[in-house]
Image (cartoon, rainbow, N blue to C red; front, side, top):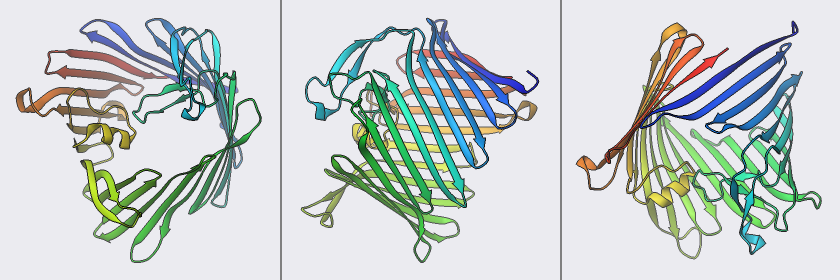
Length: 389
């Protein structure tokens, strides 16, 4: 035991209003070997007991770094819906009853960095049906099995990536128990200096089926810390454009417009611009900000951002405020406030308020508070903590 050192974190949230219930509880244990290697155990609990167990390993041999892990399902026996690729035909979904305890997945990644260049290899293995993917671009992860029925019991992905700035390349090979074959690849250029203060990014993505999208972004430095970024993505059936002015002065103010370029028979025949929404954000410090997001088309905006579901019901706009500062024992407190609006039906269109507070009580103990107040009368209050040892 003298050659190693234990540490970790215990994080939990307990709902106290409208009823008392455990929302989440995560226990992380870390075992450090010398100064180069760390073995971790991450256990997640809910009201039913232990629902997820992961073990992770990280370390290095000089310039060679290694990370890896194992994941298990200790107790969940729910019936889940498994989705299949559209190219598989019928059936597109299948109901499957999980069996526990069960092995879920394993992965290992090695990377070598020398003289500014990097080469990495990653091996990832899943047991059916624990491969998760955001198939609807709505921020929700579903059980998605990349292999067509009849189901295979395992799926393996092998990735090769290399980076030599400004060029990077990622190649993925997949195996559905029939041998490895090409899956997809990404070729990217990042921060390419052109002239007159212009920088250029580009990304090409294609799969075994062919071209998927090509994205370009140009950032023009104007003066006094002010720049303008224009990003455009071309796919087989639509175009997306985002314009973001930036200012690196007292904080940073950014204005982003989300939409689609309307074209005729050719990509250069631009006929108009369809706007889905816009966002104004001003970063006052590393964790203090003001953000306003307005959606003209909620569904298209949420799909474009590929984020968690932003709005509920008829909501179309939110105002967010974030603040931070020095707290007890050298720590930092954070406070986040979100206000949501709908077109009509309530005073000023207000629908709900969300507030999150994290405040250090001791050097290794943070108090967590979460409050949700809705115009319909629903109120939820959760109290939690993060204890590091």
